[in-house]
Amino acid sequence: MALRRLFIFLIALAFILIASPRPQAQQTRPTPTSSTQESPRDDQDPIKVFTEEVRLPIVAFDDYGYFDPTLELNDVLVIEDGVQQEVRSIRHIPASVLFVLDVDSQITIGKRTETTRAIALRLLS
Image (cartoon, rainbow, N blue to C red; front, side, top):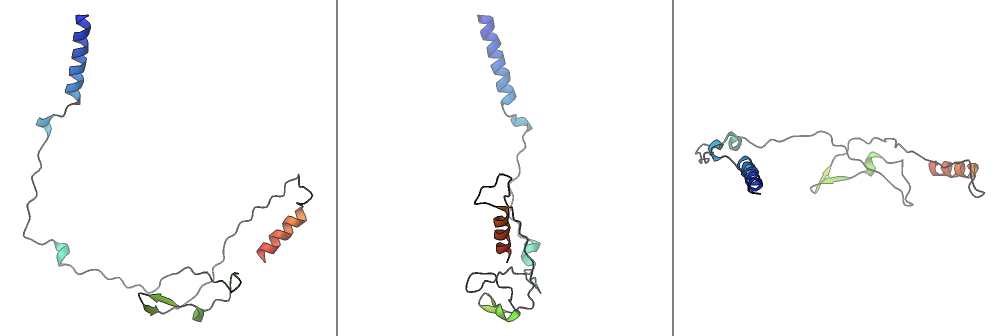
């Protein structure tokens, strides 16, 4: 019994010695002193970047909520920080649309292939 207690004590002591920090290996860092020199960043002027073109994604809808493809340059007004900006061009970009249609072989009476095709064509127009 005494041998077992001694073995457990030695294992616990070894674990404590391995897990404890070793102060002799640690180095103290010197505290930073305030320098009287100004850093070079303080002497520099702020960087100003002039941009010639900014792209704004805009979608136009008519009074009925449908997409309006007749958007023109004079129809767009851009105001930034209370200042009206000049609009130089408008580009019409096509949208990518994916339709997944369920035309399973076990179609019920109310769900026919012709009906599904007609609905898809109505959505596209």
